[in-house]
Image (tube, rainbow, N blue to C red):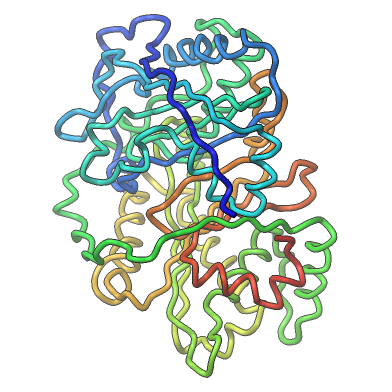
Length: 443
């Protein structure tokens, strides 16, 4: 019998900065990286345990208003030309709701069906796409209370305004402001300088328009796998015992798990051949460019998608864990090396070249037979420690229904890794019956 619950919207209002945005800051310029970001609204839902202190919910709104004084673009709206955000203190959409179930009951059901968390996305976000994103608020928040306590806090952001790092940083700092009552004048954790450093460009002169692949016909579903500490140790032994040439480096936990998952996804189930595939690794440029220390805490988008390509002529090698993990490691390191001492113009040229070579045109971007995945690692980032005063979240749910993504983050004890996968059902089913995955992952 399908689990039934109903979310009831109580109110919807606008949370504005606690102090007016000065006139000279009312036009926030977007950057080149904002221009090339996916046109999508990306939700994150954090599920918190019982909280009997109702004043905490008021503090949630008040603290959001205080951080908006520092991060005023969040309360703005995109300009018509989509090259800036008009920061006139229009406000963040803030929705209050209730749900007719208990948190513990929901969590028990969500272990079987993670897609139940979609019910807690901010109202209307599921309907946002490239046709209406730029008339949608930059940030939308929904706080849904459970029966007998508990809270689902959903935060959705427009990707053309900021990347995942910015969002997680904001949520983590917002939680501290809420918990400790930090006043507005002491809030200062991000620099709004990316539009100045990387100004918008005329993309029609440097980028080919994307190939129209049509709307995705297959529904994406979410599943969660857990690689516990002992399983990761056994997986490392498997890498160490693999025959063939030595690696010459110690692969990270993320590299090993990604290797295992990618091989299982592209490995043929019959006598057919491996399919061509691109695995994208988002590289956060903050702290990676020695010549640009000023971007270490920049607001906005500062991500390069590193494409790792599997070609048909690598088929025999793709059975080797060594070959795949070396392919991942070397592909990422090549881009990191290019960025270390790069100038602003060289970084932009690198992004353009990567796009042209790997995502544009018919060979890769327009070939529907190419299997496209993205691996986004949040390990070592304290998103699971985000405490607004109610303790740490019991469950996190990342939203991406426009592409197939692996989200990797630390377990609560930080010794294992959780993987949330948003994939087509045929790929979820394939992983669930793959012996290598069953040997190491807990479903």
